[in-house]
Image (tube, rainbow, N blue to C red; front, side, top):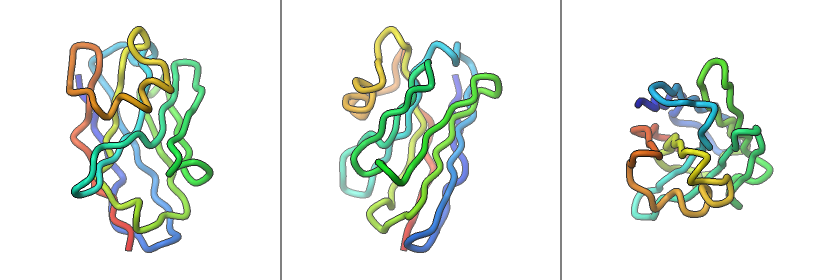
Length: 131
């Protein structure tokens, strides 16, 4: 299983970034997918999650500014981030959880507490810095 994030970087306040995650090694279309982030000194939190039916759900910090999307044919997950703020600075992680164990709301809320497991996976993360 591999989840490989890309697209992180440094941007000024108010700018935009698009993160992508390339997935392989599991039955992609049967997995709930999400973006999570961890700022220095803080707990990991859910940013946005998308279900197998393409239904998105967002954390409070992302609502109205970020858009999550998935491409089941290309096995990619994207996060478009607009109007970025310094408090968005964090390492952003791509994650996947089997639909059998994670509905989108459940994954958004509890996913940050899960370690790598048999039915849930994490990428290595990509740094986003907003100044």
